[in-house]
Length: 470
Image 1 (tube, rainbow, N blue to C red):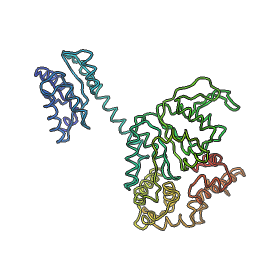
Image 2: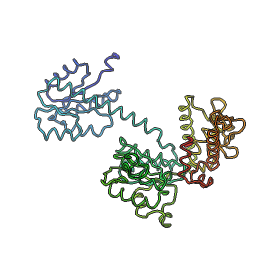
Image 3: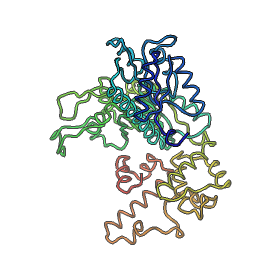
Image 4: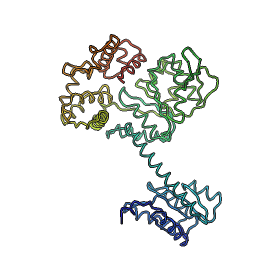
């Protein structure tokens, strides 16, 4: 068989009328299609199975409704159970609305009445093929989008978590994700979104700890122009932005009590009212929240509303700490090194056995985030294509990974405060280095770093954004 014929689009014609089979085969061959024919549904399934064994499949099937043995609707039902199946265009000499509706309900992409017109058949085929191409493209794009948020690891805790995520994604219930800082709670939230029916909609992350209490209502629900000082224009809040998608409320335990009651009302009514507005705005969202705090203890301490806790905790998920799954460290390490290489345009570093043994032995109080930061720092110090234990130990020495660089690791002119052209830039660079060091000393823990610095967390987040340290 020539390369040209192998590249032809294959159409399956299923009809018990031999004249119609022959007529369609001649017409479709003339248009450049390869045509398979079958007299009924059973013969069509047998042909599909035979060709599948040879690695070939039909893209579209033109299928009669009334046939002996297995008819058109029966064939549609049988094909629905197969992962690889052609798009089906139903044809009938008894075309009526109920028959057409039933065919479309069973999965047909179009319905044509006999006698068949050449142009109508050709147009329907091209439309079906175009829809298949778009669906395939969407699947590729979805896989590409979900790849960075894939839950890596084959440990028992991660297998269990992946199974839970798959089941949760199929519902539209609220989810509360718990786990330590840096464990990967946002990765789980994004995987739930990308695996759900809302995957085509927006995913809107909100860091509740980073929003000043006086602005949280405006951030969540939006505001109208002139509703308060500084409101120079209308602003859409996170709830509206997440319409028909997923709203991710990270660090929900840090939300002020006053805002909790308004959040609860929005979740219960599925409506929001912008600050300064009068009209309720309906929103269709799924809420996924995350916390590293013990919300049950916060409820007991009256710092978190009980009714909001139960509204969010419909489906609880826990992300295991990295120290609970050391066997997953190699897969995570290789993923992070590949990402670092892609970002810098280099080949990914290999990891020698001694370096991997060291990585697996660490306690990781900063969890997955700490592992990523450690590998990023070690990649800078790596000499050659392989990451060694020595490069890791250089970063781990003193526990201040990439904080105050040693003399051997000179700062670039853009980072060195003493090369700053102005006093203001000197202060900015010095502040950025100081914050980076304190973050490293606290293993990337934002809450602990803010407490060490005597700074509000929302203020620290602004500093991290300003200096590109997040």
